[in-house]
Length: 418
Ligand code: GTP
Ligand code: MG
Image (cartoon, rainbow, N blue to C red; front, side, top):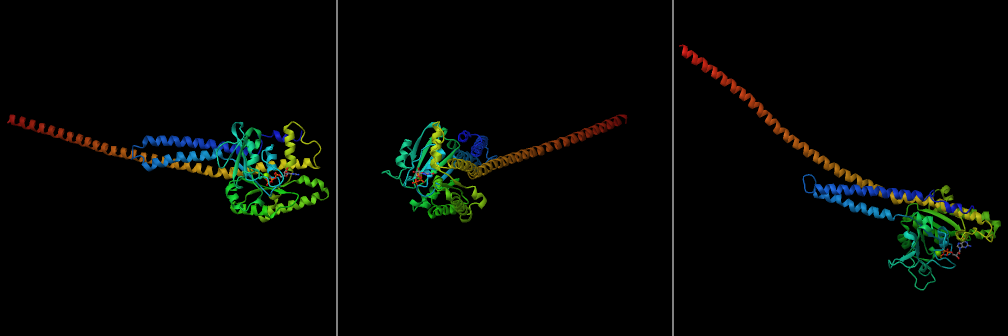
């Protein structure tokens, strides 16, 4: 079945770029951690000898333990974050649900999503949610009330509800992708707050536009603001609800060309986040609703569609998959760069500094050793000299005594003869 192939892809997913890089950098930091531990222990054994090592040096080396631990904690938590924006009812929540292959986020007509909803993978197969107000795990079903605009006890719109969903239910969650759903950009005057709170660490933004209308000023303004705070954000534009085009086939190509041109101009000319050629690769025509339905059908072991869907369903479904593939490539490459580049620099820096400190200690001890040898040599030379002197002296004395003895002998024998 042609629709099934997509489900089977695992190890060759572009997300593996990030997954493997994350594993590698975590392993490297484990080694750095060992290295720091060894150094701290070694330095500890020298700390009483202030000639070899000074107290500030000991402190400096010990401070690396916390630094490395801090980086390791951040690295373990690092993930790829994608945030979805667009006008109310364009289908943001439905797009996320389609990618997750399940109806996790509330969706519906009217103003639905009421606050920021983040979906991330949970270990151990547990599904729950937590709010900003409390760490308590709440049943995931309550997202229908907490995140829904029609609910009485509404959360503030810039609030975040974190939904933890079993990793084994979705490859994207397993590979550390975190999804952020937002209320419509047209329902708030607080865009700056949103950006500061939810967007600065996003690796990819998806603008969910409505193919039945066109890009709106509110949507454009939002991304203009984003690109003043982030340099060249990665933005995809999904022209959602493209199934509507099936009912007006006579204008389909022209409408598509119009949307495509406006979207490319917006990315390349207005925002200047990429060149027109790359922008072409960032625009898709999809139907999130159809894709979600097809995937739910597949999950039940039934065919992706029962023939009642609008004309062109397969193309839209393939385009959705194409979007997912390009999105996965983009997010994993971008996240590796933004999340790991800085940490690998810091890791290198720490390793270099520790090496320098150890080199300095080694140099110092070598100097002390050679000084000691010099001192010894001086004493040695002195002794040698004395020895030699002694030898000379004794020889001289011996000769003198010998001569004296001879002299005395001669004189004695002479005296006797006389
Ligand atoms: P808010 O949360 O209110 O900002 O809306 P949203 O952008 O999250 O839209 P949501 O996903 O709730 O979808 C709004 C309505 O549009 C729902 O009834 C969806 O079923 C429907 N919808 C979403 N995507 C499509 C699509 O591709 N085609 C059609 N025909 N309907 C869609
Ligand atoms: Mg929504």
